[in-house]
Length: 219
Image (cartoon, helix red, strand yellow):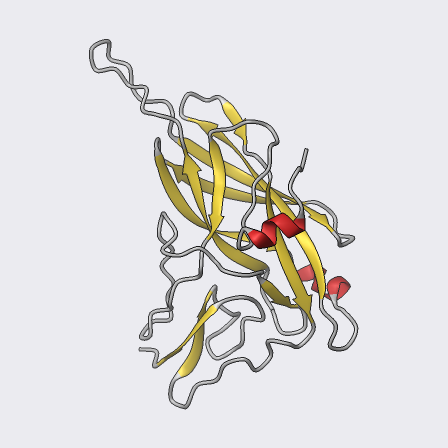
């Protein structure tokens, strides 16, 4: 059951989690996207957020060409259950095998995305989640300069090293949707080109969503 509202999510800087099936493995936070490397354009996503994303993420459905993506921190609160005395190994490392998305405030079909993310015992892992498929953008386009809102409800499915399966609690991501509002939000002087994290479809293109931009002279 999803128990927290969009208003609560915004007050929590766009981050919320609510009680569903109990699991020690859960999406913990939306991370602020890292700075792109200014020579390669690459994005390095750490296991724990360097900073939490402030405000509500934005998707420009007429500019974005790739799935709407956000970096997150995923935690595993289970402790190491190994025992050297009796030869027992730790079985509490987790592997996420898929993410499940449903949507509130938009007529989008549920979406499952395959994954292969290891979250170590008593540790964290970073991941970039594909939250809204690009094929759905046209159906989300607001009229003119209007902005609409939706909530992506996402949870993880996977297995522990013990082979026990788990399903995380739902994590709710509020999203503001516009048409064209991010088309020319950042520009670079040649020969540098625009690069962003998360990336656009190609260097030089606007990502059409919440992202960290930089100008890079690619080698």
